[in-house]
Image (cartoon, rainbow, N blue to C red):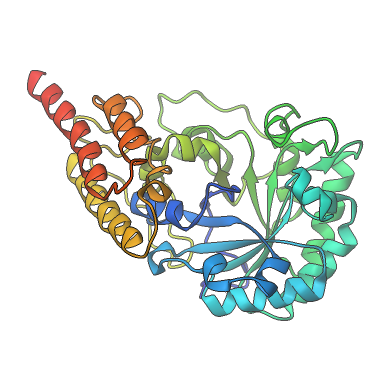
Length: 376
């Protein structure tokens, strides 16, 4: 159960989180991410409330105990259904329920939830209130700054005020508008301009509400600049001063997925959001930098954990590719990285492929890295 205080009813700020991403942040990815970071708050893919009420709950909600802290992102617009789905998720042991008010995909729009709900802040408030009345774990909202022709300064403040007054413990803001017509989900992540300043001003206006930032964050230094610029090294470019207050959390999505090694450095700057365990900086070695933990001993542990996990998944009837497809983004810039990707991309798809493929892929990197060290 999250440790809360009267001053901060949500997790212990600042929080580093990995964003919910449909088709990406499934249970296999989350297990993998947890091997890289003990402190990151992990989110599920969005799961629709109706699916939880009618579907295979173990398949939809099951996870490995090591994934904590882990939050469920919930999609829907019916307060009673959202409350019941939240109750079921709490019984599964999730640490947070997050309401999706930001996804612009056609699939979500057809159900009139996700980013569509930016136009219906009162309905969002009713859903939040219903869930808060049902569960004891934190209930949060992830939203955009507006949609279509909305004025973000007005739309975001209205939605956040209503959610806050209904009991929301936190808001995570993707600092872009979403265009519901004319842009694809990918374009909605890239084309609408970012407005980080608006999110910082929102925090200044809501000092007792946890406000976290999502959208466009590519590096750990960039993330740190929004929560505590004092953590930046002297060699880092000074960030442009943001209007408003420092934020309570940062949420990386595709940047953390495609360069998974970023997760290994986060624990050196962010506390554990539930236990409050302090940051644990990594001892540097020949391959480490402030954005990646590159100790061969560390990665040998990751290799063995993932091989064991994949073997158990295969024994239950799964396929190796279900696990390894999330691992291709490791070792950016490392010697042997190309061979690592080749092995995972080709060998993991073959019939009967087993955990030995993971061992071989990691060992290709280890051999190349060790050879480079010996040559220096």
